[in-house]
Amino acid sequence: MKKKYFLVIIGLIIIAILLKIKPNNEGPNLPKEDDVESISLINILDGRGIERWTISDKDDIEKFLQNLENSKKTKKESVSDFPDKDEFILVSFKMSDGGYIRSTIHEEYKKLYFEQAYVGIYELSYKDISSFLKSTAKEENKENISEDLEDILDDDF
Image 1 (spheres, rainbow, N blue to C red):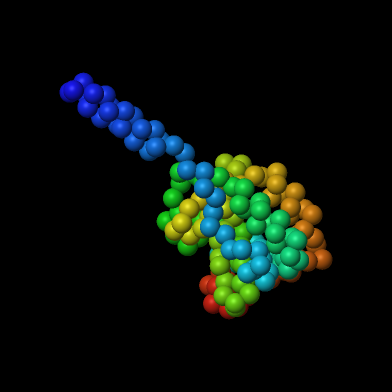
Image 2: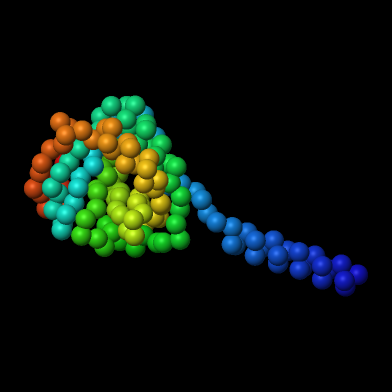
């Protein structure tokens, strides 16, 4: 009888260990495409916004959200509002109800990451995002700006 209990306990310990080391491949928590009015991608360099692209087409919004959804959760933690980088892209989702959801995309060691502040960091497919941006972020949709990051966050930019 003791042997049976011992084997059950060993089995439960093994299951617990396997569940603990199982990778978490959950994607980011993204808004539904119908709730997003537009997406602004703002290139931030040394604390200043220098370029902005706005995505308003519903098909393009859907494609962008799909690219983000296909990302893989990393073991890195998000511990601040913005990445500790000189250059990153501020992703601002303008919601239909009037609010904003802001996240970032940044490059590190030739990999691209989507970061939701204090939630998680997700590795993006460089090829998919690059392809999307080349086909969607056209020069005629680019707006040159010169705004401090704080001003961008304060305004309905």
